[in-house]
Length: 300
Image (cartoon, rainbow, N blue to C red; front, side):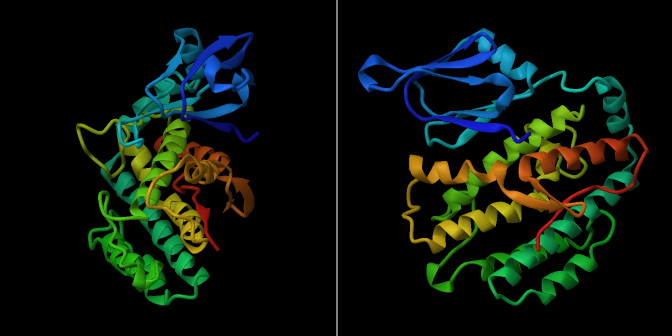
């Protein structure tokens, strides 16, 4: 079952009541209280300093493997709470992940980048842009990507994805639609981090990303082939002439549909949130020596 993504951008008091998330709004807001079954929730985004959340609710959300995302003063996701005990074989998988050999991790990164570039090429194909050179780069990715085919592909991809008249330059703090891309990627990161923990792995221990200040290195690895799906959602926003200079509630609502996007994985159509669970489960099997193949979505 696809889990719901809940967004709270105005003052509210969140509490637990009979296995339900209970939402109470200030009287002056005129909004009625409501409840949502906790078991139906996948992600909760807290995007207002006047949102209050009870510890009993927070504990229940984590027990149900809900990712709780908090935003900063710019309304961008700044951090998240994740379930610490999301899998019955967690200790065994932790040990396998920690002991994974360098050749295995390089092979897993090769599969990751090959699929990422292939998906980027198919985004360009969808928008009738040249893409054969991207497909060629994907096929040339070697173990560990020593030639940085990922970076070479990115330079081509971002140059072609948006209309040249837009003057787009990809960067965290560059002009829009970078703000929309960053928000979409933050939602994707929460989805993937939730799946990583749900599959019993340490989110801080990546197969390629290494940063002592980053607690989600593995999520950052796994999300790479999923990024092009966010790019498509952002392209649709740009093409619709919606004003994306600011991340309005309406714009965020559009991006909150990302976890429910349909993707193709292992020959089947699946919501993106379910697909990430299949990907992380396949990664856990690779760490345990039960498989050598990562399941990633294929963008067509």
